[in-house]
Amino acid sequence: MIHTSTRMNKKFSIGAFALIFDEQGRVLLCHRRDIDAWNLPGGGVESGELPTEAVIREAKEEVGLDVVIERLVGVYGKPEKDEFVFAFECRVVGGELMLTDESDANCYFALSALPPNMSQKAVSRIHDAAAHHRQPIIRRQTEPSTHEVLKTLELFPES
Image (cartoon, rainbow, N blue to C red; front, top):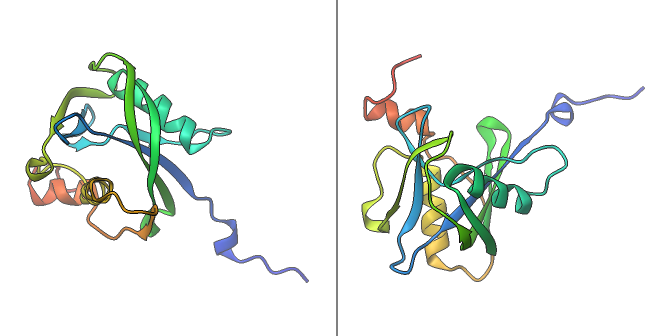
């Protein structure tokens, strides 16, 4: 008799996000059109796509920039969502910073002046990238979600 665990049947989602720094060490964030929140350019990895391919595609789709990957910053587990997120430090090689269907504002922020209406998980990834660890970080992230942060700031209504 074969026993199949519920855990074995779960599907995990995978995300890929770009950490793009300018010459002053500021990080690029995009403001989402769907909610009042800033985020790193990125999103879900599509079927048949590698996380490296996804982050390049997402940077173009969300902020209009052509990027190359400099290094893997880390792989982050989000256990409450059965999700893994790959964070890559990227360098701009072309394109033009622009508003898109997904973002209504783009701005470089100093690490000491990140906006309050953003995911604390993204903030942790930004600081990991800025720390230039010798090896990629592999960590479970338990910081509040974007929606939890927005509720605290009273920018997102209760469901």
